[in-house]
Image (cartoon, rainbow, N blue to C red):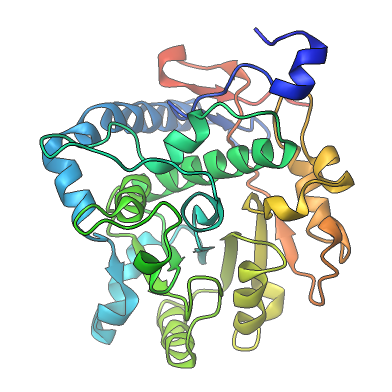
Length: 341
């Protein structure tokens, strides 16, 4: 239960948690009961794995060691075509600088302490999400942005969708919580949310604070997309007006603008640009991000007071929602159908 209205303004409601995934299916686009059951089972398996396998010392040791997803630079050209099996349609998801705020931007100290005989139970993003803070609208939005991107990557990597991550270049030297040799919290987080899936690959940006990739890497990416006959690029990550827009601007110089889209649910805005009227309208009274508002804002050049020069096309995930409605199948599976509004 929340505190009284007066106290809620200064302290916020009881802290939300980032435990199980909740995935909703829109009945306008998902009418097959077998599909609902299938997704229900997938989400139940993700939640089981997160609580068991990914908490084991053996798994954590491997996750902390290094990124376990493949770097595009290390994939031989003759193997490019093998990635066609991960295409659902003709699109690829590209996520720029996942979890940038928590690992690189925040000045909030999130301890990475452990003893030599054990590993931290929760990753850094989960610790950030659970942390009690004086109510800050921008942080509340940021937490929801982090959670939705986490849930998206958990689901889509498990379902073997083709995903490319743009990892901050030289990230180990710039982690805001500090990097301790042998215990790389960012590596752990990326390995957790991608499930070390063979359908997820990555490139490094030229700098941890720039979304651009090198010209050679952009040329390689274009060759990869051409070999797979990819027609659509779907973008997410952060931030709008910053690293994400930098990558987008370079991408459309080589790839057809009409087939590049920002995806509203997984596109992130810096908290520096949210403590204003744009942030107030973006967050609902119950703490949810208004996806329709988020999508509309991406089409406005002055949204978030950014004065963006290039405005992208925008999509929303019509089949999926990362907020829940009425339960379908078993409530334990945390899959539901979004109420038809």
